[in-house]
Picture 1 (tube, rainbow, N blue to C red):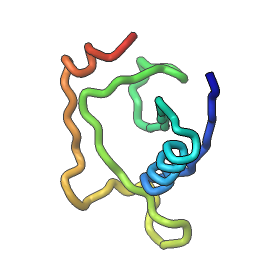
Picture 2 (tube, rainbow, N blue to C red; picture 1 turned 180 degrees about the horizontal axis):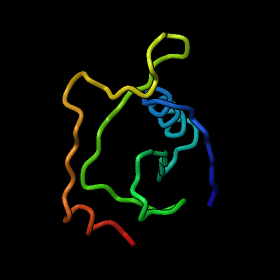
Picture 3 (tube, rainbow, N blue to C red; picture 1 turned 45 degrees about the vertical axis):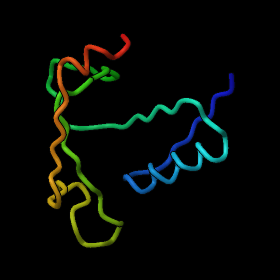
Length: 92
């Protein structure tokens, strides 16, 4: 088994570009993406694995654009609902 680690950068465009590069360049059979988030409750510690039932999409702005890069995305609908059943089916 070969393992390829890539730090793709911040944002959905970098993520999509990196994913496509892995698919085309390495014929990857599996891809795992990780990220970070903020605002977690005090009951969680560093490196806790969290499987959300609901997520909120946000975008970042290019450096120097004059806007706060962590503003919530306010375009199309951005709340994604999962279900307990979907999460229950994930391997533990």
